[in-house]
Image (cartoon, rainbow, N blue to C red; front, side, top):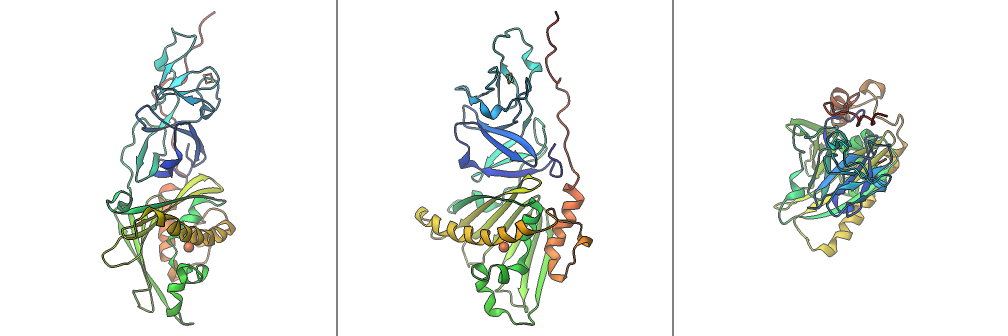
Length: 332
Ligand code: FES
Ligand SMILES: [Fe+2]
């Protein structure tokens, strides 16, 4: 399960997308179904009824906040436990369950832990601007035809900004650029991942700091004295060839909500420039460092590759043990 992206907390999708109906969502190659219980708390099960394998997302949420399968109307709670099995009042319900994954709702985002476990061993690391008071947030959710690792590297790659983004954010950097300019990249390991910053010809004003949050998040800090101005890019694996991009802007100025479309429009334009190159990358998944040529300014992306191949590539999780697979059929 969750091949290549197992046993981590990840952002999954924008919380505003989860309303009253069950929502099918693909995450790292697994089909999940998200739903809210009677208290509005988000839950996720594998989107496969343990009885006859049909998609639970075709069912409905009961007034009691359980997910009801469309086929024989078994009802499951947020932990996957069967709580009602019609026509079988004598069924051993404790033996009938769907697999769940741990879920949280924080900062306008739904998060999940990529393993079929009752409880996660940790909590998600949520970049602080998402839950800061006095900060306005803008949300975009996009899907690109690419492996998430290529999208993640793009987000950590400062040297492309003056070129690919010449007409958008790059135009602030271009005035400093000379044919023989030199960029220097710093990388510092942090408890959550790493921080990278860049200078061009030793000028710091051209460079903003970028945070990498394991496993798949980037936060760009745009320096405005005394203000918070950040761009978050979360690269959520859908499957081997699709990535869900959550682009979240955070600002502590011009916080009126009618300005949100202005900020979103600019973020969408920048993302569209990135999409084109990320989707064109081959091989689809980032290769091992020696399989592509690299230079000094690739420091941050090479740090990501080191982490990716050491901790995520090849990872997988097993279905939870300790729960029997299904109820024994009744004897003749
Ligand atoms: S297939 Fe889901 S209840 Fe039978
Ligand atoms: Fe970019």
